[in-house]
Amino acid sequence: MITSKQLRNSWIKFYEERGHVNIGAVSLIGDGSTGVMFNVAGMQPLMPYLLGKPHPSGKTRLCNVQGCVRTVDIDSVGDPTHFTFFEMMGNWSLGDYFKVEKTQWSFDLLTKVFGLNGDEICSTVFEGNESAPKDDETAELLKKVGIKPEHIFYLPKSDNWWELEGTVGTPCGPDNEWFYPRHDKPCGPNCGPACGCGRYVEIGNDVYMQYKKTATGYEPLSHKNVDTGFGLDRLLAFLNGITDGYKTDLFLPVIEYLEEKSGKSYDGDEEARKAMRIIADHIRTSTMLIGDVNGILPSNVGAGYILRRLLRRAIRYARKLGVESTVLCDASKIFIEKIYDEAYPLLVEKEDYIVAEISKEIEKFENSLANGIKEFNKCIDGIKRKNQFMSQKDASYLPETEISGKQAFRLYDTFGFPIELTEELAEEVGFTVDKEGFATAFKEHQEISKQQGTFKGGLAEQNEITARLHTATHLLNAALKSVLGDSGINQKGSNITVERLRFDFNFPRKLTPEELKGVEDWVNDAIKANATVTLEEMTVDEAKAQGAVGVFTDKYGDKVKVYTIGKFSKEICGGPHAATTGELHHFKITKEEASSAGVRRIKAILD
Image (cartoon, rainbow, N blue to C red; front, top):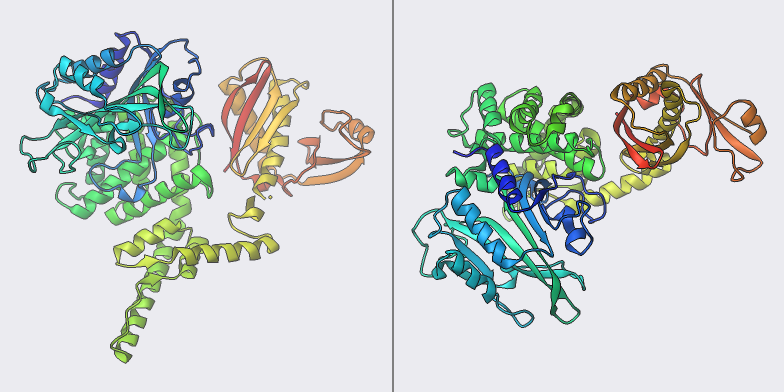
């Protein structure tokens, strides 16, 4: 048996011994540069360097184990192989070595480190087309390292070619994928890695970026790269002779805990097995997203919405499994303390915070889940009664099996059911959901509520969230001056979204944990005081005389707006703001970092 920790360490050690530097993992949360919400592949954060930018390490041989999140197939989670979080083991050559070294190293890793039989290893290469030649070069190198000729398969561009679709001038090229047979019984005369019979397991792939894409085809690159990706979760299962990915040590402690709490058998109960897989996967991903260096929280927009959907789906399946939702918090602790403690030490540091946020989301959803499911069942029963009545009147009547868009929107608006949850519930009873009708109902309600200023999750609730964060920014500014004992601290920039505030201020060093806690406590004390926020218009001189905070420059007109927050803050600002500090509920700093020389940056949320 090989453990997940041993597998990670073996990968890094192998490539470090061959001159690679371990660059570590980056945030799971997309930074906007790649246009995606989450990092979905190990090579994704390295795209700028594969495109020619020098790596900050100054090295041309890199390796790491990178966490990834893919949520396009959340509904598939519950089978033996789908996960929303997974890890990719990668190594890269940035204009350094190429095919000769890489084919040999991949073969050596699989045979000498992981103990696979070289006579059984199979590989696929690019078969060529009108734009690029057949990759005979890689095929010949594979034969030299020990791959049998009959185990080398030529496949089309759709299988063995990598490029950025629709982009001209970027590197691209053929890839070499590694496979291993589960058994020696072919499905037929043409059985191979591409036939889909399940005999062959894909272990990983090496991409050879040797061409530049042009408007009419491809031309050779002088600066050639190698991009390798091997899935840790998949390889771990395979090396241990396991076909169910949830039986590796990445999940087994959580599965065993769920068996204990539910009194149900993972192997003996198909419905319980599905529920345990969904709970384990979704809590693992949620733990990773909340505990990430750029951690997020459940919300109704963007990445926060995906996180909320994962947690709420886990809560529902906990109910189906017959366990208390608090079990989800315990599952998160197992992932942090027993499974990922070495690979992701930040999770250990943030454990209390992660568990507290999962607990909050459980509490929010539990209050409406039971009533929402009752409402859903009423809806289904109503449709069935109508079908029965109409069938008795008209033998040719076709029964309805669709939940209307308005009904689905009511479940969303009143009970917090994401449309995907309603679809999943409907599918379980053989029904569908009118998604177009849902979108129409959503838009109609948004338009009406925008006029009334009450739309839940729309502009009015957002134009409100921003007001609270604006007020929190003023309190943060005052707290920093007070806690750090520096009245010379001033705002150097800020940015507010519906999910968080960002505040830049002049200060020469990193804040200590004690100072950050002091700032948080100061702001939360002001929130608990439920102080009134008042607005006055006055001249700049009057604002100065009253001690209002502001960077007094020519940008101000004859009159300025001054917001006073009880005894805590007086600051020039354009608004908008909360009416009282009590509306802010609770202030939490999520990150403190350098913004530029002599300037620090704090990110914070209200929950």
